Length: 235
Ligand code: ATP
Image 1 (cartoon, rainbow, N blue to C red):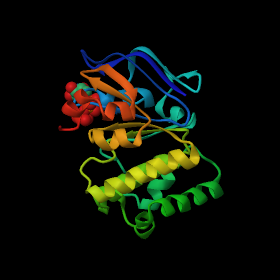
Image 2 (image 1 turned 90 degrees about the vertical axis):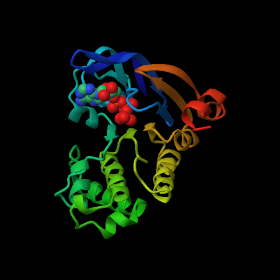
Image 3 (image 1 turned 30 degrees about the horizontal axis):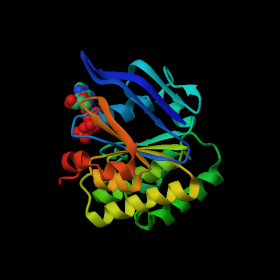
Image 4 (image 1 turned 120 degrees about the vertical axis):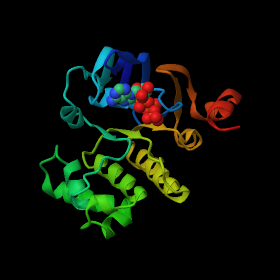
């Protein structure tokens, strides 16, 4: 579904990603774990078209994404829930969800999907008329994910969904990720500093160190690898 080959990307004179290759197959949850600054966000942003790629290729559903603007990448079925959530603070919760459906013309379908979002995250329905900026961190994270889902993506890019959230909210968000994958077959590329949670929910994982993939395997194998446990699981 997603194939990244020998990707190079960076900022100004600095290359952050060095010949990075990874794949996400249909129906898979794939996680990328790595330290602060390893290049996880840069990878997601290069896939979604937010950061320009310098070399290599990104192919989604057989289509090369080079030169495709970010808003058209969404139309192909690839949506991103960005790090730091980036919700529209002055728009209401409902308006944020409507913005997530900017690619769609089926008003009835959009309304039905807003209802689905509310059943997934009931707190969003309670807060639907409030400006997004008034929500708590956890509620904003739920809104960011729900907004990304409004474009009905085949692949969801999730950047640090657990960052700064209380443990019970993290559990709730990971349950939703699991359900979306299991019930709708949605593929997910998940970037997380909480490597334990990420490897528990994912099918496969990649370890990123200073812009290079240094290890990849089934998530349960990585979870039990002593080197990974020491470096990323705090053991
Ligand atoms: P974190 O979890 O801290 O976000 P990360 O693995 O997602 O880490 P990136 O955010 O991709 O890492 O950053 C990789 C490198 O690129 C870091 O050295 C960072 O300082 C640098 N970087 C990120 N964004 C920019 C930018 N807009 N301009 C210049 N350098 C940047």
